[in-house]
Length: 393
Image (cartoon, rainbow, N blue to C red; front, side, top):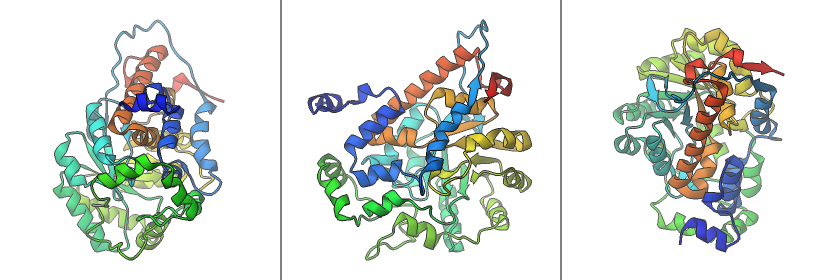
């Protein structure tokens, strides 16, 4: 029986009924135990920034041109030395095999099918080496800076040996955000749930069956360096106890030199920091507030995009993530000069809903929206999008 047939018989929606982000989110919520769903969906504090990430797109209007002859649309773009078939990529996210038992296996395969880039997290659940061997798709390694400098060097060396071309250092997470949804459910790695959290697992047995039958859960980028037996490593403890809050620009510059290849900073938000990244020779920056999961009340990457592109856009590649759910959202960012847009929850809910098939459906819908919206804007290629096509309310 297909997942769609099962959903119809059980009174729940099926994958073929998922037409947009909200639909994938609903299906994911049906299938995930609530502690895991809330880990994906939640943000920091009052989740103001989480909501604002998507709401910010409404403050900018598109101004289309007509009669431009747009029979064909070219969505290819060059970013961080990589040629992508789409101006979107799958942002690195942690713990994917908790959301669906195939995790990064499904994510990487879907990215390869659509010719785009995907990120492997330091908290990933499939090894970057295995993914690099299996897929030709460009892979970005998202890195956290640890107090243990020897660990940093060892992890970078492993990335080099794995054939990773792009290092993406996250700089907005020197300590963990206040994620109250996780505190309420007792979400930890490994699981140590509250009674309410355990009850939610009991009423979603399908997830548990897949989890038990699949390969043993692990964090292969960290397993050889971190001992979790006997202790519970919460996500908050990982950020607070293992990452280095004393990290400075001197550390970043030294790491860039040690890496020796394409180097990108994720979590830049101010013009001053963007300029500093360019000054030390970074190849790219990602404007990001970590999906609203770190500093609540911070500005959105999209709202900072125009000013930062005008300041450093000629010196490095500017990428952006946070709240992108529609092709029109992506076009607005590209028109402001972003080289590419990172998707997070957009594909994670699709992954949770239906694995690789879900991610592929979500990417196919985003590609179709981009092609249709480009035609409606009167553009045949990404380079034709520009700031004159936007009006700020």
